[in-house]
Amino acid sequence: MLGSLRKEKPKFTGSMTALITPFDNGELDLNSFRNIVKHQIDNGTAGLIPVGTTGESPTLSHYEHEKIVEVCIEESAGKVSVIAGAGSNSTSEACALASHAGKAGADAVLVVTPYYNKPTQSGLYSHFMSVADAAKVPVIVYDIPGRSIIPIHDSTLVKLCENHELISGIKDATADISRPPKLLRLIGDGFSQLSGEDATALPYLAAGGHGCISVSSNIAPKFLSQMHNAWKNKNLQKSFEIHLQMINLHEAMFCESSPGPVKFAAEKLGLCKSEARLPIVEIEDSSKNQVINALKECELL
Image (cartoon, rainbow, N blue to C red; front, side, top):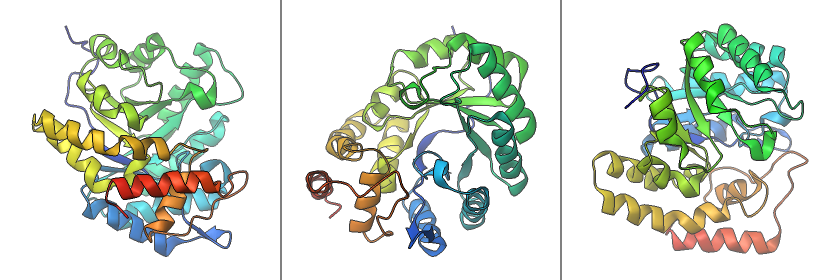
């Protein structure tokens, strides 16, 4: 039986892209970023996520962070959802970023569990409640214990949903495909469950998820939007065929710390330079070969 906390249809579904942030000689490359947004929309992506981890938010200034959000909203022009990254291990900073995104016209904000501080579940609850108050738009909770160390417990998500109507979904990067049915029973089908792990995106859908916030879709937006659409249309064979075709690309995108590999791939496809900010460095030659081989296998190169 489905939970009753969120009965409406999920607000965010399908193939969504955690956008890279292009640089040119250390500065934001806004022309390339605009082209990337257009490329995503033209290839069927359902939602755009600027300035998340893949967008190198930890090494952007506040001005740069806000500028990328504004340009993404402007360029997308309401054609797709924009879920702006607004995460920080400082609650006051996350509130400020979320408030800006809401005022700028973002459809929602993506807020990661605070990293390094190692808050308790009570601390996480207070953090997300404060950010939701500041954002005034839906909040997607980002659970990625591989980077933030602290997971957000299902019971904490339930408590958040009970006490704040803007807590609207989760980006789940735990790769735990037993979780979607549990959250369906606890919260309901109106709570957007978005995989944050490309290689298990299709199994996540099969378990009751609603979509994926993807790194690989920076490079293969058309294929991944087709996979999600095929699943939605109950063409299970086609969705699995695309998943099978993409599996080595997903692995290649994480052969080194993200976004190193995906930025190299973007350069090979002519989307932008591979330049990243320290401490992310140019990937090794062996990794470059792995990325190139995966691109060729997917007929992207």
